[in-house]
Every structure is written in C-alpha cells, then in structure tokens.
Length: 419
Ligand code: UD1
Image (cartoon, rainbow, N blue to C red; front, top):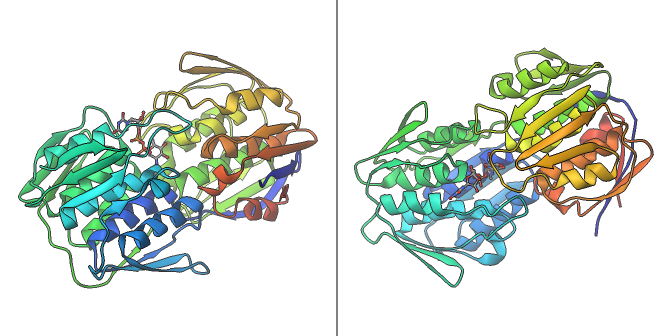
C-alpha cells in the first residue's frame, strides 16, 4: 500500500495552479447521460472522476478521456444501455447515485446501488428519493439497490427539501430536465458546483431559473448539437493551498486559475485569523505571515464556511494563539483527523460536535493514517509544518480528490514523496 513521506518545516514558494472541481465534474458527468454528445474541459484526473467514467462506460456511453488536456468527450448513442449502477462502482464513490436522476429522466427506469455509509457519517439518500418520488417515480429498495421507475415519464412538481443537500439538489435538478410541466425546487443547495451544473444543463437546452434557494425548471428538450463546457475550479483545493501558504509561505505563494468571488467566506475567515492575502481577478497571493489569531467557526452549506475545509483549517488553528472552536454542523463523524493530529502533538479536544483547538503548538512528525479525503490532506498540511518526518498511510483517500498533489507541492519546494 502506498504511503506519503513528508519532511517538514520546508518553506513553500512558487506557483500552484488549481485544477477543475471534482464535485462540479461528477454531477455534470452524470447529467451527460441525458445528452447526445458533450465535450467537458478542465476535468481533474482524480480517482472519483475515473470511477464515474467507468460507470458511464458500464451504462453504455462512449467516453474518450484526454489525460494530457484534461478533456473528456462523451457520446450517448442510445445503444445497449444498461440502466444499472452496480455496487462495486457506487461503494467507493457516493456520487454514483447521481446517475439515478438522469437514467430515470431519459429511460424511465434505473437500478442503482445504495451507496451505504462512509467514514464521515451515515450519509443517507432519503432526500434524493424524496424528490424523485415527488416527481412521480415509483421507488423500492431491494437487495441493497434502489429500484426506480417512471414508465410514463416524470412529472413536474413543487418540492421543498426538508434540509439542504448538495447531492439531492443535483439529482432532482437533472431528473426534472424532461419532467412534464414545471418543477419548483425549494430550500436547494446553492454551492458553486450546483450553479455549474445549471450552466451545463442550460447549454444542453434546459429552461432553468433560480432565485436564492429556489430553482424553477420547465420541461425541456435536449439539444442535438455538441455541447462544450469548462468545469469551474476546485474551491476546496484552493482553500487547502491557501492554508498551506498561510502555514509555510517563504515570502509568498501564488495560486492561480481561480475566481475569488466563489470563496468569499474562506477568504473572510483566513483574513480574520490574520492570514495575509492579496486578491486578484483570477489569482490569490498568500504572503508570509505570523501572529495568527484564534477564531470560532461553524461549518454550514454555501455561502458559509465549507465542511470540506474543516480539517485543513484545524491544522492552521493549531498555529493560532488562543483557543479556537470549530463546530461541525454537516456530518456527524468528521473529526477523524483529530486523534491523528493529536499523535503529532496537537492540543485538540472534542465535545459533542465541537472541536476546541489550543495553539500555537509545535507539531512533530509521526506515522499517521488517512481516513477520508479531507482528513488525509489535513495530515499532509500537518506533516509540512511538523518537525522531522511524517509518514501518511492509506493515501488512496487523497487520490480520490487531489490532482497532482505531490507534484504541486514539490514544485513549491516541499519535501514530499510517495513510496
Ligand atoms: C457533497 C460533496 C461533499 C461535501 C458535501 C457537503 C460531492 C460529490 N460531495 O456531498 O464533498 O462534503 O456535499 O458540502 O459534491 N443528507 C441526508 N439525506 C440525504 C442526503 C444528505 O440526510 O438524502 C445529509 C447528509 O448526511 C449530510 C447533509 O445532509 O449530513 C449534507 O449532505 P449533502 O449536501 O447531501 O452531501 P453530498 O451531496 O453527499
């Protein structure tokens, strides 16, 4: 099994270009089932994306991935279609459940494996099914599979989500594309990745409007012409490298291919902590700082501070003066990095959903275990600031979501290698 070895305390300098967003690409790939012919640019080459492509191939779509150009071309010739998403492909990547909406919309039926639990919490799909049922799908669960049917097509409906879910909003949006009449979705997630999905669906021919957390979709027809779409940048990757810069920039770390307007809450939080940032139109410069201050944070749906950056922020707060608090409000079990960070010397206590972090604390290298995607990258950040050597086990989690992580960090003078 591969491991990462990091020799800490090396200052970072240079440039990091941010990749395309994994979480925007996944629903767009799922929605491509609706289309005839699409070309998607800025696709990050990470494991979750490769798994989704494998799923599309399994369903019967033709895909051509250019790894050099980060471009995928997908065509659906409507031949030999399998309306099935098997367990082996959905178990490693929950987003596989997003093909449910597009298979139902296009073929009136789908059999999709229940994704099951995952390390950060139970992560049910009840909200996905709630929305699809409101659109007229008949759904039953059998042998670990969601079996859904809409023989006469889906019908537009008014749907108010009882709580905000990114995946359920995406599934409902895709499913509603061809639903008869009009669909009104209320209390939707409004993450930039959802706006990117909306812009893709509009290119595909969807009549969609949104206002705040309400999205209105009118029955639409798929355009025959080839659709070209460039995926937005990965805001979580940007946040991760901004934190790396805040911890270790020699003089400055230059991060580009981004849009700072989409990371306002992250910029705001980092500035409050005392991180020096210069914000440009498509780039951010993180300057060498010092004197980091404590802060209290609660993770919440966009536009608030993201749960996907919670673990990384915690590492930064081990270096801030005083006691900081982070309340994890989205997932019930997302503090698994804490015992590992404590093994490196961090002073963190957890009470209920809140982590109390005392700083500043010197971290020391240790052998640690990655447990999920974002927890893993927080251990990389900790290793970069720790004295001596840190060995991170189970790094396949990292490969699910960070494109060229070692290469990007090495280019900025970090000492990191994979064995
Ligand atoms: C997406 C992101 C993930 C991010 C999360 C929250 C992708 C591929 N993944 O995950 O990186 O951490 O948003 O920003 O985009 N819930 C239910 N029932 C459901 C669905 C969700 O109770 O049917 C709960 C979840 O357990 C969780 C909360 O709702 O507590 C939010 O989850 P959701 O927004 O759905 O996350 P994902 O779409 O799975």
